[in-house]
Image (cartoon, rainbow, N blue to C red; front, side, top):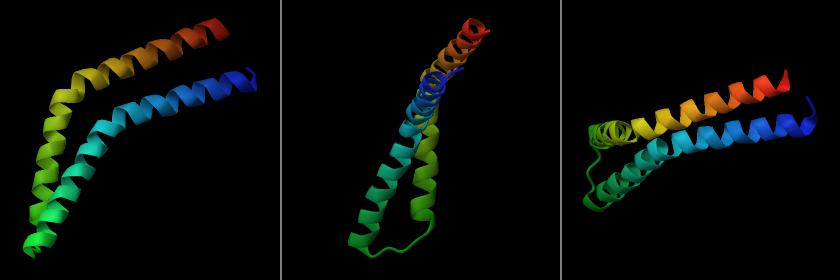
Length: 88
């Protein structure tokens, strides 16, 4: 196993992790930003106003993105197993 192969596998792992996490984290960040702007303009300082919408949006995003996330994980796992088979 040479260095180029390790870099390739590391790059593939990081890109898969980013592709899986981005929709969830991006939606939570966007809803947090929108609620923060709403709180700043209306001077409402309620903690649950930021917490509950984030949980709801992340749940909805997970519900819709779960098939895509599972597909990416299965493809990544198959690819890694095939690479191991080629290596040995």
